[in-house]
Structure formats: structure tokens, C-alpha cells
Length: 574
Image (cartoon, rainbow, N blue to C red; front, side, top):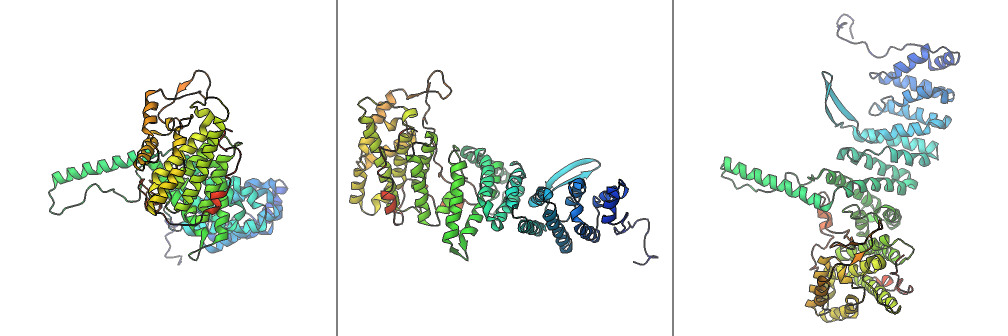
């Protein structure tokens, strides 16, 4: 710039001026007790207006003396780690990554600090607008360079992993601790989850841990967005829109016929927690598909590996959690890719139900998942449904035999027979939804099959399952079985209605308490999917009524025979 044409008063000096000696000289003076240049170096590194050229120069000097940057210089290292390198020029990014790799190689004591710094950039920064000393806005940074910034972070993390093989051991707790609070915006959560899943691509050994972190946080959202609350929020929005449309029609008589009662957005959930969960479910399911499909073709080995990881997380987090609405659909979606996965999932649930060493509440949850999965999944063929019904009903009959053989009257007690009742309800619920498919191919053969289940013995046994199953399930099952003259349940239902509901012991001790209309505290995990972004995807995979058409046919002979000879019945309380 021409000196004569420069406005000296209004033009700030370029940030190329540097004070103090070189980094090597500064560290030498520090060792001798002279802190003047050391403090000046810290001050200049913390300058928010620092220029790219200065950053590159300093980083090169630090790389040349990285062996001297011991724990004694921790504060200086933290200042360097706060340098605004993300989003800058490629030269700055490369210089910074070079410094990081040298630092963690020579001084592993700073590995965790470096990892925390990188992970802190996995979410978009918050921008607070301050005017006259008042903060009046705090919104997500809409930086268009976010993808580029994230790429730089992942490049840095991959370099560190290459130089320090034990990085994954220290990274997982940092990813857990750095997870944004679940009340943050959907965009913040979505970016962080996306970046965590991206890490698993180049550090596959931590994938199961990362999935556990993500699904654990999504569980918090799911349990705070009940089905009733989501439906109520959507109804309130529609009601408000209709009221607004009526007001506008009264004020302005338009010639055109405009549609009314349409949601203001086809993708945004009215319930704020459901909106966050919806965005995270979209990211997670997109990841599942990207892992399993390579060039549009299902990759068997990768799919199996992902299935094992998700199943582990399912057992640890999802199965023991009651009344979830949506997160369990991640395993449902994966199983829809291939029938063998769906059958493996059913077999896994069957093992849990059969295992007396499992807690009763977990076994009952497994029975609920079996019934709901069989009833709702359109990709489950009739032959698989029948194979699972054979296993369940055989187990139920063996349990009845074991109770009859004791020679004493068995009472209707959920605390004693919980897995038995949930297994019965799973059978009833499955038949409600899939009886049409069973009967559609050949009515005579289908009716013979239903009669072979000997459902009359089940509903009339001493444990009286119709008394504790959900009334809606009981009534629908009774209507269907009467229609096809398989079993007549109404006499038992009327007798149960004349008596008090069964009494169960309070888990807190003390006096007994009467049960409510849902004594099994049962829920059906694969009831219709309500989140909007993926609603259409699951709509084509779920039976929404009990009048289900004929399903596709596939092999399920392995399920028909496996675990059918466990002794004595597999339904005893653990």
C-alpha cells in the first residue's frame, strides 16, 4: 500500500509485528527464571486477531523444540491448543496438524488435551451477539464452512491415531464427556452424532462404544417424548392451524379454494424433544445404511458386524428400558435388510425369554419385543411367524404342564408367572395382526393350524392369562377367535370382569395393592412410528391394522426346531 495514500488514524497495523525472541530463546530464558518473554509469548498467542503467517511461523518453531515442552509448560500448551486453527487456510491446518503429531509423539502427557481440543470442534460454535453490553442472541453458528472444518478435525484425529496407537483407549471417555446436553438444538446434536459416527469409519475398534454413547443419549430423548405427548403436540398444532384458517376465511373471502388443516411443515415435529430425536434417528439410520450397503449392494460381512454391535447395545440399554417409542427401530431397520437378520434377532430374543437366569422383567420385555416384531414387521414371512408361534405355544403348554403336575391349585399371580403371561400376550398379539396372512393362502389349512395351537387350553388354564393381558388385546383376540370358531373367550372374560382384578405384592413391601388395567405394565415397542422424517420409511414396513395381507414367503426351518426341547418349559420365573 502506498504510504501517502494510507489513512494512518483509521487503518490498524497489520498483525505481522512480533515481540520477544524466538521460542527456543524464550524457553531458555524461562529456564533461567526470566519470565518476561514467556508471558509475552503467551499473550501474543492468545491474540484473537492473530494472522495465519504468525501461526505458521510459531508452530514451526514449536515443532523444532517440542522435546522441551514438558509438563512444566502446560499452560503454554493449552494456549497453543486454543489457537483458532479450524476454518483457516490449508497451510495453517497442515502446520497445526504437524505440530500436534510431533507433540503427542514426544509428550504423550498432552494426548488427552489434544483429543479434547479436536472433539470440541465436533459441534458448531455458539454465537452470542452483544449490543450495549447486553447479550440478545445465542444461536447456532451458520458457518457454511462447517463441513470443511469437520474434515480438518477428522484429518487431525486420524494423524494422531496413526502416531499413537493407544489413542482409542483415551478417546472414548472424551467422546462421552463432550456429548452436548440433550436440550441443545437439533443441529448441534446432529453435528456431534454425525462426527462421532464418522470417527468409527477410521477407528472401527471403538464403534460399539460410540454406538452405546449415542444410543444412551438418544434414550434420554426417547423417554421424554412419549407417544401420547407427541400426538397431543401434533393435534394442538393442527387445531391452531385450523382455527387460523377459519379466521382468515372470515376476514378475506378469496376466490380460490385453498386447502386447510395442513401442517406448517412436513418435517418439523411440534414436540421439541421429538424433533431432536427425529433428527438423530435420521442420522443413525443413514449411517446404518451406508455401512451395510456398498455401491448399492448389501455387504454381508459388514452388515453382520454392525448387527452384532447394535445387538450388544440393544441388550445393554434398550431392552431393559421400559416404554420406549422410537430408538428400538434402529434394530428393526437393520433387520429389514435381510430375513436372516430378522430371524437371528427373534432367536436372540427367544433365548432371553427361555433363560431362567435372566431377570423376569428382562424376559418379559423380550416376549413383548417378539410379539410386536412378529405382528408389525411386514418383511417377516408367514412361515417365520408360524415357526415362532410354534415355539411360543409349545413353551406355554409345557409351563402349564409343569404347573398342573405340582398337584396344587395355581393362582393368577403376575409376580410368579410374569414371563408366562407375557408369552401368552405375545401369541395373542401376533395372531391379531397376522391371522389374516396365516389364513389367506389356504383357509382350511390355516384354520387347522390355528386349532393345532390348542389355544382353548391356554385361555382356560388355572393361571387365567386373559385376566392379566391388556384388555384391548384380550377383546380383539376374543373377537377374532370367535369369528373363526377357534376358541370362545367371552365366558372367561365375563367371569373375570365379575371378580376383582388380581392382587400383586407391592415391590416396596407392606400391604398388597390392586393392579390397574395394565397389570403386566406391557408396551408394544413396534407400534407405528411417529417421527416425521422417517415416518414414510417405516409406514411401508409396518402393519398398521390387524387385517394384514399375505406376507412374503421365506425359509425359517431353523427357528422351527431350535430351543424347542429346553426343559421343562423355559417360562419359570428367574
